[in-house]
Length: 267
Image (cartoon, rainbow, N blue to C red; front, side):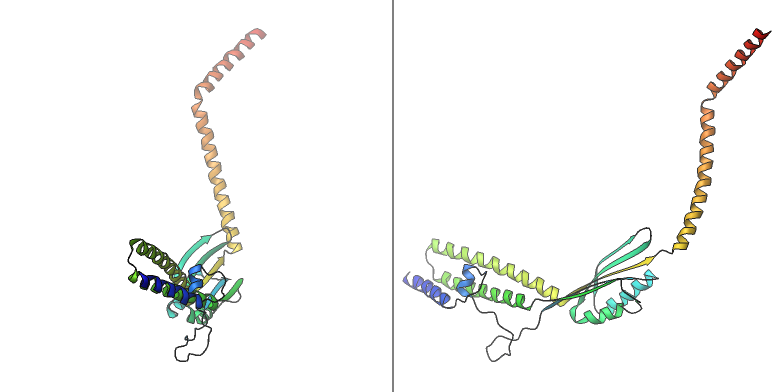
């Protein structure tokens, strides 16, 4: 038991000596904080150089005369640059037909891919290319993850020396909480690496429906619709007359007798 308390006290003492001022760290992280490695040349046991972590994104919008040819050109560029289509949608309104593609592409092929799909485009309605440097965030996450792992190792060493059930349960509770934080940071780091390794390019291209063609089709349709409408109206009128034929006969008979009676009075 003395050895257990001595070891626990030694861990706390050693951890407190490693403290560095760093905002937004938890109590456990503060106990074990290790300065994030700044990019520099590796020398022996020093931290290796961390390359720049850049997230690249682009949005392109342009008009085309042939949607199918443009799509095939983009598919060729996708295959050549080892990219993949994440989303493909198409819509049509009164004046245009639009197709929208979301493409994920290895970041090293970002520029060649943009160059390939830009061939033959006279001008872009919209062209936005952005890059976000997340190197500092990446280093911070890596440092926090390493800190948590070291803290977990120290709790495991203490657990090996524990003898009381209450002590074992308390230490295991701490280890479980630390492992949850490790998994969360691993997920964040994996997501960040995914966005860095693969860039996102959204391509929106559309075809404008010819105005003259639209007018001709619309005018011809209106004439045909008018003929059909007139024919159906006449048919409806005749059918309505047929449906009320008893009333028409009755009116005609009444009119005949009334007229005959008026003639008798005049005589």
